[in-house]
Length: 120
Image 1 (spheres, one colour):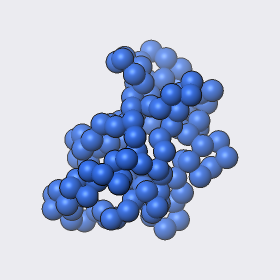
Image 2: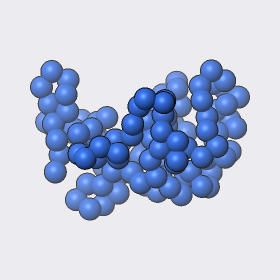
Image 3: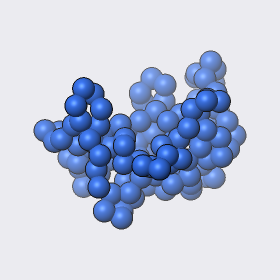
Image 4: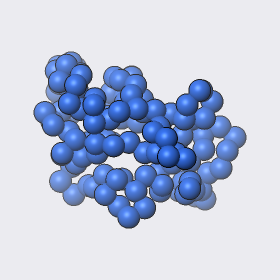
């Protein structure tokens, strides 16, 4: 996942399934990152800095819409407590947390061989 610094606030755009099992998004310099949650077709579903609030609020309506458009995908009722896939873990579960996933997106720093550079 790349962090886009071109706007007013740092933003991460990723498929909503990447955040299943996570209730708090990443922080940069102690501030929440804006998340652009995408459908399987990479279309925006929601833009939020409050992932937990999204899961308990407007996710129910978004879930119905996504389940109708993309029936082959899983759309859990409570994705904040359900990690994507049985063997996958969320970034927030690892000791490095979100640090291992973020990188600068425009003319910034990237890791070697496709691996992101850690951002502190």
